[in-house]
Structure formats: structure tokens, C-alpha cells
Image: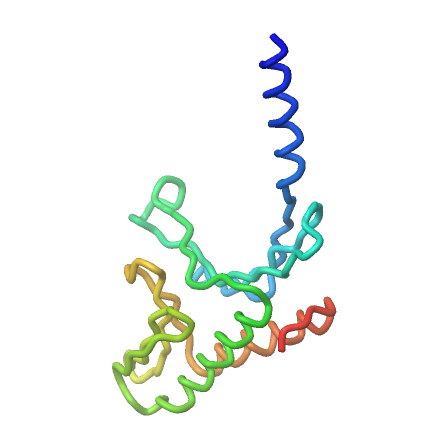
Length: 160
């Protein structure tokens, strides 16, 4: 009996010790493509060296039914400095190869590709499994970066 109580107490203490509570705050959203840049804002944590985490993610449909066919896809996740570097490099890559088609590179371990579709120039960012992409043009990537910088400055998050 004492052993069971001791195990329960250790489980409760360790759960409280390592638990964190987050609030997902939207930095950027594109309703058409269901793509988001979000801040995992820590509400409660026992970790004193907590870093701010951001993620570029979205919803994809496996088939036409949103109720049963939608799933979340994460394109990139990192701390404030990593995400700034990632977005900044995407903007620079898009500017550099804006006139070229099917140029592929890796930025922060994520596959990125330029593509011309029906006269429009996009930069694709692939998920980790290389199955789905989020696609934006130079103007949209620049807007995402600007909103990210503005959000970090308003929240006093060190991103450089």
C-alpha cells in the first residue's frame, strides 16, 4: 500500500514539475490556404529558462470532407531567432530566384522550392514528409516576416 501511495506522489510531483501550459496566439493567418504562423505563449511553466516557440503550420484535407479528412501539418517550428532567420532566408531566396522556375534548396532543414503557376511566382515550403506545401508569393512572404517582426517587438521578444 505504501509503495502505491509513493508511486502516486512521485507521479503527481513529476507531472507538476515538467508541466507547461500554452496559449496558441496567431501571428499570421491565411484563411484561403488555412496556413498560420503561431506563437506558443507559455502561461504556466516551472522551467526558468523557457524560450519562446513559434510554428508555421496549417490544415490539409486528405479528402473533401473537412470533418473527417482534415489534419494538421507542421512546416517549421523553432524559437524566436530560428523563425526570424528562417523567414528572412525565405524572403531572400524568393527575391533572388523570383524569375527562375523549380529552384530547390533547404533552409533550416526544410525543403523550399520556387515554382511558376499560371504566370504567378510562388515559393513552396514543404512539410517534413515532403507531401504537402504552403505556398506564397514574395509579397506574402514579406508580409509574414513583417507581421512576425511587429509581433515580436510588441511582445518584447528578442528575435535577432
